[in-house]
Image 1 (cartoon, rainbow, N blue to C red):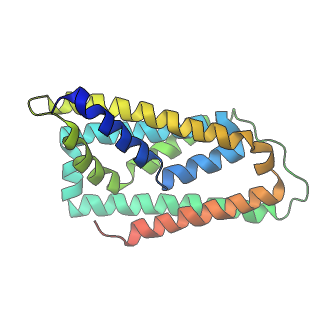
Image 2: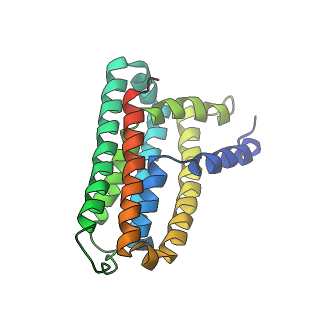
Length: 211
């Protein structure tokens, strides 16, 4: 199978994967609603940096070791679940604190917290053991026989990161256009409560699910 011939199927799979609900989607939606488009950019870049690293780990065989090791898989699962629970509880606390503020808060500046937002996105992706298992199963299907595994995987991952970045930034731009509405006190409390519940549910699911 030629690489160019398999590329359309690969890109279609990437679009379907990136559009599926999960921690990445929940983070981007909340960040774009609260901080606007510019505030969501570091989160998207962090998620994609973590994704690219997992792709390289898969090509180098490290992801297979993680997926095969019960201890490594368990450690990543606990760390990932714990971090999602932390983010969810943090959102709940924000919703609870918002109950004590009568006026609508001003628009949150997009400048601050870029590095923490980038790290938050990267950690959510890197601490997800399902990402390791997914990369092992996904990429080999699109690497033609006879082509170098590492270089081809790294190239395909560039396409995936580029496409997902466009999809997520488009989503963030759409959400941020209604940013003034999202930053109203009642709406923001509801958003924090819902996103916190989603993140906690995802964390619990990651903690209790097996492979």
